[in-house]
Image 1 (cartoon, rainbow, N blue to C red):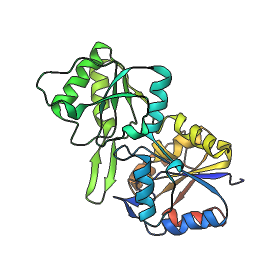
Image 2: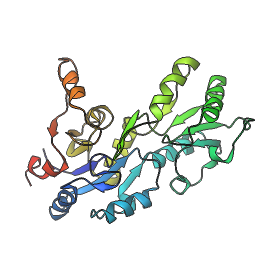
Image 3: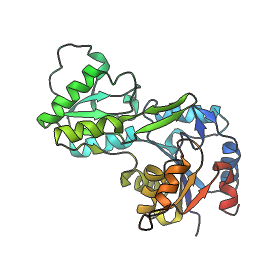
Amino acid sequence: MAIGGVLFDIDGVLVTSWKPIPGAAETLATLADNQIACAYLTNTTTRTRTQIAELLTDAGMPVRADEVITAAVLTADYVRSRYPDARCFLVNSGQIGEDMPGIDLVYSSEFTGPRAPDPPDVVLLGGAGPEYTHLTLSWVYDWMAQGVPVVAMHRSTAWTTADGLRVDTGMYLIGMEQTSGRKATAVGKPAPEGFISSAARLGVDPEEMYMIGDDLNNDVLAAQVVGMSGVLVRTGKFRQDTLDRWAADEFAMQPNHVIDSVADLPRLLGL
């Protein structure tokens, strides 16, 4: 297959807790030497795309902010098109308003209770962290049950840190959706919009792109659905037992490629 471009997940693929995974910088340098365009699609919502680019650059991987596509950027596009002028209540660990220009944001951290704020037009759920308190989640659940639209930047259930796994937004959504009988809209991975948008930004057909991720479902198989070639790395949140269970299902879509780490990507691509 022609290599039109490479799309990377970041956390668990290139870095862990913003420390470089061995071989990641060398892989990006090899792609640059071969003039292969790259983009970076991440559900990370604790930092802006500018901050992410700076952290990667500091880790030895020169990346521009406009090459980074965050779930916040995609969510802002979605809200502008579906809920123009909406007052949005944002629950997120991190100040990311810079990546959401034109969106009327009210941060949950501005309210400490016990009285609930006035119901917003839309609830936005970013990445989980200390802001996901019992009180705040109770407000969100109450509004959700009343029919206030809930837009999640992603449905990730966990991410990996240097100190172990941390539960993420999707873990909370599962319970709130089941008990309220209402469904949140998720915009980031594994929704197809991010993959399609990434290909469009590079000016490349999805069928000519490789997606490199550590999450079998959110990264790799979701990219394959839109026509990309999926490459699963055995770093980050990768778990062999998950892959084994998936491989045992003869009817399930399988990853196109599995490699030990991003350091093995140049060899896979024949570079």
